[in-house]
Length: 247
Image 1: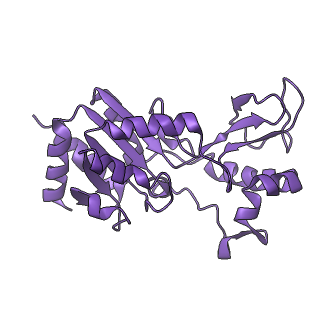
Image 2: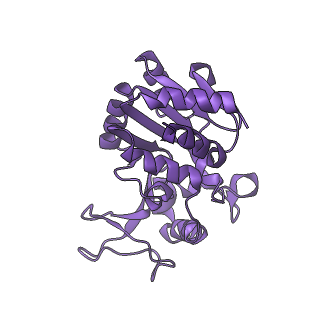
């Protein structure tokens, strides 16, 4: 329990109009989302970087799709935790609010969050290599691997950002705009070491925003934090939310 830090975080948020939540793998880990890296960073003896890459996909699309089908099966019954629900509920509290996430699991949306800015795409999205059509697909398991586009018949790939690919420009632009203009940035469950997303905390702090970090351990961006909440987000964010609800 960190009553002083919880109260301080709630006080910072109480008068805010423009808030951004920036989340990473830590918030999903509390829901039991397994890491996609097995022992030694391998899956069936293959380096994950080899599978989660354009080169790996074109070399063996069936193997890559099998890897992603396993991840989709592991996520199929995972539910949002209290941290996801609090962050979704804040869209009704703050006039300008955005959730920016590095996660691909869709748990923010499952908790009710709208317009989530997914920096690394979504494991539930398919992208056609022929016509470029994107669609959501939550059928588990897929009827065939690899799936084929119903419009043009070309092969579809997972709608995630792979190693060696750029983050989506439109999403990145929207994320930077929200973060540059926010009054408070709430950083939840991310080590903040991967760029360009890692630069978000510095961008917000430099622009004058207050930074609240919610993480079991200090991240590489912890020195920018005005308030640090050390522990599980699923326990701490509901405490902050309860203090916000007090008159």
